[in-house]
Amino acid sequence: MSDLFKVQLSQDAAAAHWGEKALLSFSNDGATVHLQQEETLKNVQKAGRALANQGIKAIVLEGDTWCTESQWALYQGFVTAKNLDAVTFAENSQSSLDELATLKRAAIWQRQMINGTAEDVYPESLAEKAAEFIGSMAPEHVSYDIIKGDALLEQQWIGIHAVGRGSERPPVLLTLDYNPTGDENAPVAAALVGKGITFDSGGYSIKPSEGMLTMKCDMGGAATVTSGLALAISRGLDVRVKLFLCCAENLISGNAYKLGDILTYKNGTTVEIVNTDAEGRLVLADGLMAAGETGAPLIIDAATLTGAALMAVGQEYNALFGLDKELVREVENFASDEFEAAWALPLEKFHQFNCPSPYADTANSRAQKGGGFGGASNAAGFLSRFVPNEGKGWVHIDLAASFQNSAGSQWAAGATTWGMRTVARTLLEKA
Image (tube, rainbow, N blue to C red; front, side, top):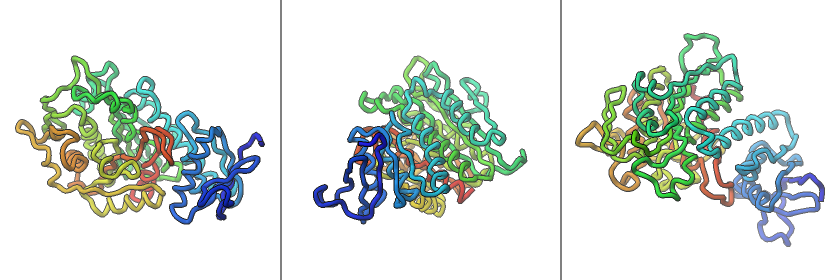
């Protein structure tokens, strides 16, 4: 067999001896992926996963049948957390190669962040790595500031400080400004907000061991909006965008925040803590207020926020929420255009009041397992208290599909990058 494992794509069915509707057939120097009439890209991705499961370490795509999306689907199925640069794309067109290189660069960074250990990816390092990555895309157009530790209190970023104060490694808020206009007074066209909980023990509402094992991925929202911005820049984003990453470790210590605490936010909203494992919404509240202060007409936040979203849409979709129904529909369509799956779940003004407190304006959850009925919508309702303009121009992405706890037929275990392309497309279309 050749040293290069070649993979071709065919519209013809595999020979009968490979089995009925076989996705793959093999030759002396490689394999052929056979297109199916239904769920074409999903099946190409499954073929990539099947090849990786054969122990093949690297592949070269050959032939004129490959298009940009089929190559990307094969790549997504083939790569693993330990093997991210294992596919050589077919040289069919320069534009296709350029787009694939752009996707790959952003996806590798996102996977490295989400799959990285909490020892290496902690609040300050996540902020620094994000600033370095975006800065490498357009160094002359990027500036940033990192607010750390007790300095958060001085600027009234109460939620990030409270969630992260139990760790020896301080919480931070990254504020990054991408301004390609050259005008320091240019309006901010969009603001991105990402949940950056680099490890989530659950705090005093501690998670069981099996639930805590993968909680290095709880900064997936921060990684998703960062890689989405990077992808949009590579695709020619020419308007000013600000990025806010709300970074903390949710750990237990004598200084950790506790059940029954009441936080008073910058906008005057008081929040009773009834579950320290509902911490993501507490840090995002700060980020959303910071985003609102920019005057941006478009605000996108992304977070691995609720198990309830997972229960609702599974790991095949991200969940979308917003009071601006037209925008939510548009983002759902942008996801589809980018071959990602997203599904809108209910959000109305009344969801703001579904976590009542006798001591504060609201609680951060309900004192029930999973936050009770409608937990994902109630979490989004909490966030809606902290956005401007009655929610117009704001969309919240609950990243149910951004991480796989274990390998399946389409994905290796770990980060999927699902959501990155949705964010990028929304910026390019709406900002």
